[in-house]
Image 1 (cartoon, rainbow, N blue to C red):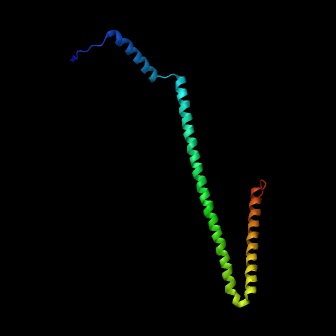
Image 2 (image 1 turned 135 degrees about the vertical axis):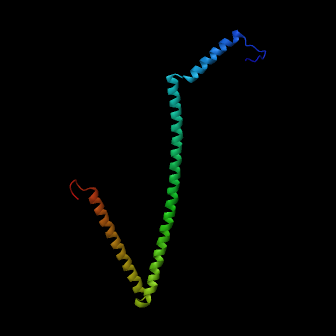
Image 3 (image 1 turned 90 degrees about the vertical axis):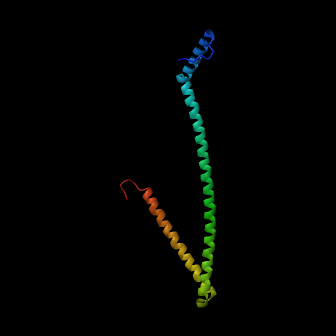
Length: 141
């Protein structure tokens, strides 16, 4: 059952359009190898550009986080130094009634120097052990 609309296409005009439309759609559906490679190159280049920007953003975020962490660590070190100084002053005040202010100052100073010496020797021993292990010859412990 066909429905009549009253419109009929012109046979001369419709044939070239149909064949041209079919040819264009075939070219769109089946592109040449060179066109595919060019498209692949363009898309790869776009992807590489976007990925590069993403990595730059990651690096900036990481650098910013590192800067903030370094500033916070520096503030913590300064506060630690203040706490240690106040601890030493408190220690001097605590033992000053027993051995006098000068004796307390000298005792705390000598104790601090002894602690510094012990820490320096421990650091030296640790470095020597680490360097010995790193640069040991094959077959030696």
